[in-house]
Structures are given as structure tokens and as C-alpha cells.
Length: 407
Length: 107
Image (cartoon, rainbow over all chains, first blue to last red; front, side):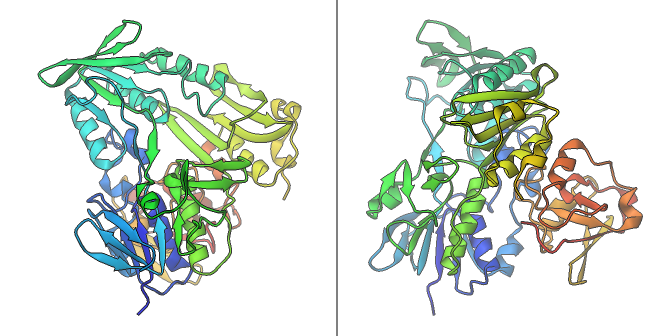
């Protein structure tokens, strides 16, 4: 019997690869191995709908257990893959068992970047990436009154908005000079600063966290390098993630800002692929190698790797898209704005409905839309078709952008 | 519990009990209805839960909001006057017997 495909990591990317292999008509065995004890689930709701009890478990599970049985996907939960023996084409598991593979997909994901200061190990300093971590935050939020969120990126701001919606006192400490600095233009950062402030969140930028003070194992305040101190009975840290590359590195695969793969998600070993948060891949929308952390990237790469394993050449070239929901405001992003040299606004920021169009050397590279879902959808089309759009057209609301997209 | 009938493009049908308040997309995914994907988890981002609603139910559904309208513009299968995103339809008792057809493709 053929060994089939082993998928390491049962998050969105791993799940999608497994499902897509069957959809491709792949007949060999498929093992989907995850280190969490749960059925594969969606992470985006963990910092918003799930914490606020608007979405329950049954809504965040990607599929019921029956799905895996029906599609002959051997789902192994609560199990870690410890090592890859590339010569023997086998993976060994932390339980001591081992499994052969013909194709191996590394969907290892990422882990929380740890806050490197004194007091970060105190009992009520939490992180949020997994379901169990989200449950812990939800549980602790109930009795907490002063929440300090370290990190003003998507996760930090979503947690801040959720906590504020529950009536808590919330402070966000961001190390950089503005919110979400890695992903949005200053105008969008300023909009979110104003939004959070208006809803009662204390936003502090350029905040260098120096330590967390506490007593009897519990955090009581977060201290900045400039001497300022913020009272806290719950600290949630969201300062980014580190890709899980160790398994690949130990097996001798190339590592850059993640596991290095080509446009079909294949590593230097033709039997091994890497997808999702851990994959350092060439991205046509970046014009460079990047590593992306998003549902879109995870799912589309899962499908592209599945196609390659099933013998169909389908390079990964999907338009990147992301979203974040904070309070009742939705930010949708299409493309990758890093390296832009011009940004223009369409719509009215005061009305909380506008988009920012980013250009590099006069070419449209990304669009951020705030409560403008139609702009976002059009942006995905414009980017996918490499339509020529000028900054003047983008800023002019009388120009119908849809008409500019190349069919 | 109210029921929904999902028709495949082939004509095959599957009747599913849907809890009041649950979305059609969630129920379809839970019951393994082929052709309903719901990749974004039901937040109106991905256009992979497109359905065609049987004519007699079209007016019983909640109106199409801006976000759904935008996403319906980019469905993979043709958008028709009775097109909806199943993640945006929450089940009610009044929708018992709702019958929808799954398009030939979602992406």
C-alpha cells in the first residue's frame, strides 16, 4: 500500500490541504496530525466573536468529525511530529510512533512571540492564538476590570475592542509610533487611534514595556521604560508570532523568514511542501519572498500544495486579502502595501467609510477599505487583473472602478 | 426544528435540520452538504457559500446588506436575481421548508 500524504499541523492550512487532496481525486491515505486536542477550527473568531460569546464551538470548527471519516482523512489530534527522516520518508511522533509518507506537508503554523521582560511569566499575563488560550482570556476577562493589552496590531486591537465592549477599562500599549504600523498607512493608523480613543480605550504609542509588576504571582501593573505605569489585573500580549521552522531546520531544509518553498510550495526536497504561516514563499503581489499570516494565504496555499501533490501544476498566485473587525468597524485589505510610495484616499474618513489605495511606481499594489466592502471586492479584481489604475482615478468617486478591471 | 432542503446542481437533494438562529452556511457545512465551503467562517469575505434561493422564498429572507451585495458581485458561478450568501441567512421558524440550489462552482 502507498504511504500517501502526511500533513503536519491541523490548522486552516493543513485542513485545507487535506480536504483539497480529496477534492483533487487523491486516493492514497491522508494523515492530518495536530498538536492541539481539538478538531480543526478557525482562529479569526478567537479574538472577537468567540470571546464575546457571539460564536460557539460548533460555529468555529471547520468541519464536524464525520467529515474526516467520510473523506478518509486520518485526523490525529494531541500529537506532535518530533522529527522527519527524509531518507526513509518517515516522520516520528512524540508518542513514539512513526509514519511513512510519499508526500509531506508542513503546515506547522507559528507561535506567539514572547514578551521579553520581567514579570511576563506572571499568572494573569496571557497570550491569544489557540482555542485554549482564547478560552483562558474569556474566562479571566469575566472578573478582570483593568486590562492592559501589549501590542497594537490586529490581535491586540481586536482583544481591546472585545474587552471594551464588555465594559472593561482597557489600555493598549504599542511599541511603534502608531497602531498596526507594519500593515497600514499612517492615515488608517490615525483612524483606528481615534476610533479606539472615542470608544474609551486608552491608546499609548511609542510605549516601550520595561516590566510587569505583581504580587503573589499575579500581575498588577505594566511599567514602561519612561517610568509610566498602568494598573492591570489582566495583561494580554499580542506582539506577533514566530514561525515554527524547527522541524524543517532539523531535517536540513532551507530556512529564511520561514520554511523556504517555491511557487508550488515545494521545499528543496521534492517530497516535502510547506504552507501557511510557516511558509517563506515567492509572492507575485509582493514582488519578493514573504511569509503571510492569514486565512486566505493558509487556504489557498493548502489548495496549491494539494494540486501539486495530486500532479496538477497550479502555482500559488492568489491576491492576498485580510480583514479585522474592531467594534462595529471592518477593515478589509487587498494586496500588500509594503513599499508603497503614494497613497490616496477615496471616500470620507469622517463618515467612517473610506478606502486607501496604495501605489508603487504608479502601479496599484494594495487597497485598505474601512466599511467599504464594494471597494474591497473591486480592489481584489483590479489587483488580480493588474488593471492600470491611476491615483487620480482611485481618488475620484465619480470614476467607476469596476469598469477599469480587465476581464 | 425547521428544515432546509439543499439541492445539488445534479438535482440530488439533502434535507437538513437547522437550529433557529444558526446560519444556513454553518448548518450546511456541519451536515456535510457538498459545495458549501464558507472559507471565511461566515463573515462575508470569501463568496464560497453562494446559493440560489427558490423563488417563493426570496421575499421571506432578510434584505441584502451592502457587504453581501459587494461579495455577490464576485461569486464564481453566475449571479442570478435569487442569489444569496448562505452565511447571511439566519434560520427562523418562518423559513421552514426553505429550498435552495447549490451553484456548480464556488471558486
